[in-house]
Length: 270
Image (cartoon, rainbow, N blue to C red):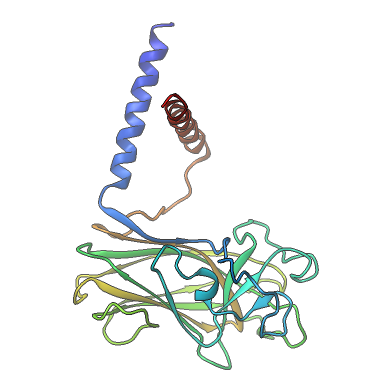
């Protein structure tokens, strides 16, 4: 039995390396943002310009621009950052049963004005633009908070535009793809996340430059979080489609632990 286990472990490691290589083939991650690390300075300024304890109307670029280096949002009106936890957010924080929101999310209005957020990238020669996102309805901690009285579920529209100049903008001109995501009408202080995955064909892009526009069509006020954006050879490349089964996740975590331990040993001996 002592001779079998080393051989089995080597086979498992080789299989894991092969699977990892296959999973990483044919796509590149363009953007990965969970809004948990606002730039400092200036840092999140609670209530800045909004009158609400849990919202800052600082420009999105002030808090999350240059993440990664050189990246910039474009926005129209008050796309803003929402504080989800702590004593300043709805008393002791919003209820988030799944924990997907963390400390911060970004929010926008569907009424009063047309809030828009644009993210611009170059997909190069890749044929598909893919992204995943979580959305939720939400009220704000203040008198007359912009939350639909009839608790209309949030409906987001995502549009991919051709962007020949490559300059950051909120999107205009030729549409390459479009989709919508309908969330749920949660309680005013509760986050009920709806996960969406989209893939748009970029073969019509002039030179690989594209802009993704986010627009909240209805629902009063809503937040979004956990961007993952990739460019790929095949639709959906690099975007997890379904949760990994628990057994496989534990197995994979174990293998990652082995690789990590090996790397640490090598670093210490260098």
